Amino acid sequence: MVDSTDEPANLSRNTNQPNVQTLTGSRLRTMFIDARALLERHVAALNAINVFPVPDGDTGTNMHLTMKAAIEAMNALEVTDAPDVAEALAHGALMGARGNSGVILSQILRGFARSLDGETNVGGATLAGALASAADDAYAALAEPREGTILTVIRAAADAASADHLNAGQVLANAAAAAHAAVEQTPELLPVLKEAGVVDAGGLGLAILLEGLSRSFHGKTLDVDLTPEIPDIAGWQSQAASLHDARHGTAGYCTEFVVAGAATDAGEVRSHLQQFGDSLLVVGDESLLRVHVHTATPDDALAYGHTLGDVSQVKVDNMEQQVLEFASKEAATLADIGIVAVAEGPGIEAAFRSIGVTQLIEGGQTMNPSAGEILEAIDACPQDHVIILPNNGNVIAAAEQAAAEAKKTATVVPSKSIPQGVTAVLALSPDQSFDENVGSMARAAAAVRSAEVTRAVRATVINGRKIHAGQAIGIVDGDLTVVSTDLEQAVHDSITEMDPARSSLLTVYSGADVRQHEAEALVRELRERNPDLEVELVPGGQRHYSYLLSLE
Image 1: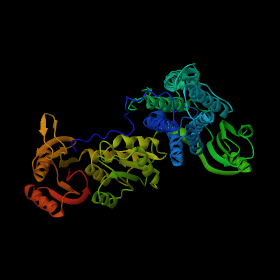
Image 2: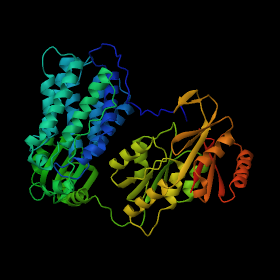
Image 3: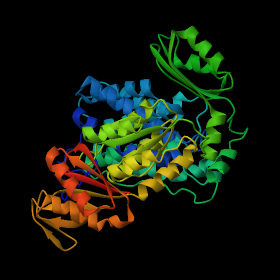
Image 4: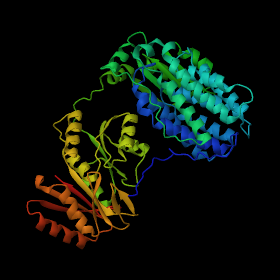
């Protein structure tokens, strides 16, 4: 529609914030929600530069899912005091921690919360102390701390925040700036990063979170791109992966589990587990411990965990296979492919189901689904390989973000309309590989000419053309090219703009505001005017658009 802006949520902030330089629980809650939103925008970029401790391309995903669990725990408790907010975040992160980076992030949040205990009004000195506590707990979690990682970044942030006479806003700004500076230095401290030509992904993820906290506090926009420069050389991922052969222990299994009711402290458990492997993390307390270790004998590590208490959330990944996938980025020939499609309207949804779409997400114009909703649909597919059809230009970015986060092999075919999405699904072939199907579907979608016919909701001027509220408009292949006083005439004019002589099939999807007899009468007239076209009517039931048109 003419006045659609579809601005992403949480990306714009009022810059006229009151000059309050302490943190309440409510403000802390908002800051962490915003910081997580900023991190979510950079998941794919963080995954792309992930080469330490193992080049498995999931640091961004792991940090984001850890923060997602933290935010969900905070929201579930509806806590209001700053210490309670911080404690809920820390507990949620511990329970939902993913991977090496996620576990360390959970300890950063734990140290932060521990320092705020009993503080009702968090000023600069208290906040600086919380960052120092966060750094201490992060270092203590690792049996063999390594510089040039997220540890270096949290320590630099804490040191910059510790100067005297700083208020909370200054502490956050200094911490974020120091974190970014420390990230830039990580290749000088960790040779594998320098060889690969990247900064540390976990460190950058933390810097982005701190940047989000600071921007949220100061009322600044979150619509910023903090994506690092990625080496533009062929095969750099494969080269980066090769740096980990033998020297960095890519053989074995990334093993994670949680132990409830352990009768010993984290230090003792850590000492015992050192015999099983490296990249060892043991965090928590006597009531709940989370373990992360890279080991060739995951069964032995798990068996020891069972002697301590009840073991849950077991996750064992073959690191050698992860490294190979990161290096090659090639999908195997597939027999079954899951399809996720964004659609709105009962008729359109039924049409997608009838041609084999696996998961449908309600959305479209003015109803853009989030990356999280799309990711849930990917996870709900029984197949391990999934193709996403956004079917709207404003949904493509969220779909690509969800695909980057997915544990499954997921790819977006960038369909910009419902007709393109339908045609793409029809191009799917069981005789082709996953990559071949992605290519075929993308080509099929691109070949479709489509139009959306609706009414302008307000007066405006587009491309020098004055449009009055209530006028019928036709948007052909994304461009507003038709303006009319009559809705049906706008349909005819839109079809003319699409050059029907080159096509054989016209599909008309009638909207929720169109009566069945009106749509049928229009289709009869279209058949008379276009005798060489097969015209098909689908009662789509979509809102916002009276008619969607597809020429193939």
